[in-house]
Image (cartoon, rainbow, N blue to C red; front, side, top):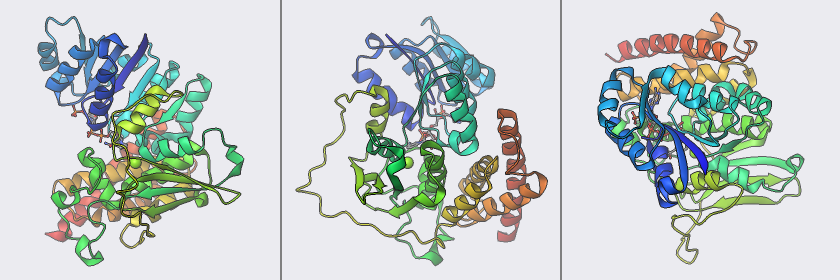
Length: 395
Ligand code: NDP
Ligand code: MG
């Protein structure tokens, strides 16, 4: 029986993974090693009982007693904190879903790779912060990383059986998020609720706001460079409001392969879960007789400074990606808390990149977990300060 762990089981990707596991037979189909969450203890315990997991882990140490109580009588072990996550990631498993949100997903993913597990990677932040480290760890331990982000799953599927040397360009599609039709001058005043009204995809709160600011797409451009080993200038972004083409690959003979499907993350999660096979999945089928149109437009970089910033980050290499991601996470926290405006998020990230580059040589820092986390920490300190300045200017 395949041994499976899900990191970030209580989130949006985690719930979809759980749904597919239960439909496939749950504990009769898989041996569940570890399930992890953070604050949603009731849901974590319920999932762990349904899948008869070996261990359930909350990232929040203060919630360990609550998790123990929720698992009482089940025989399922409870653990907490970074040490609990690390121990769970080191347990032998064949397939591990990496679906914690943010840079916190990096450490368990690296440990799972060190133990030879196949890592289904939804946590794009891992590749943005530490792509070379993750890939080297996978190679060293003969472990595989499978993409779960819908665009990267699409690209992976378009590349199946192709010679990577024949790839000319990769075209990432972007929905444009909730605010894509707003006039530029109004964007600075967008509220959290307005940024959360995503037209197509049901996702966690943070990635939904990142879709509206295109920070999500900026992370995905870097993720594409790391995953597929292409040069930054081979990666294009196009806004495709219908979100039915999940991404495309252009080859040197002019052919373009596109991957289409319904807006349902169970598609790319299921592809990774069943790879290299294709299993039947409970996703809507596209009816081309009812599809009115597929439209495309170029992104305006004045609306989406994140798309410009990610290019500078890729040109710098090293830990610049970790700084970019950490600054973005802090800027997002400040936006969610109502302290800075929507367009201030890119300003905070830009300020942080320049502040941190005078403290440390971003391109030259060694790519160890410690170096990456040190850069992440410093970037958070600087980003809080940069956000504080913008906050006080608003008052
Ligand atoms: P959610 O916010 O819905 O879920 C996040 C998960 O991580 C939850 O299980 C949460 O626990 C847990 N968590 C939060 N903070 C921490 C922490 N500090 N340490 C450990 N665990 C933590 O996120 P999504 O499911 O939307 O996204 C997960 C990842 O997948 C992200 O990297 C995102 O970019 C990526 N992704 C998501 C897509 C989507 O459709 N949602 C699409 C493509 C990629 P709890 O809920 O118990 O507090
Ligand atoms: Mg995506």
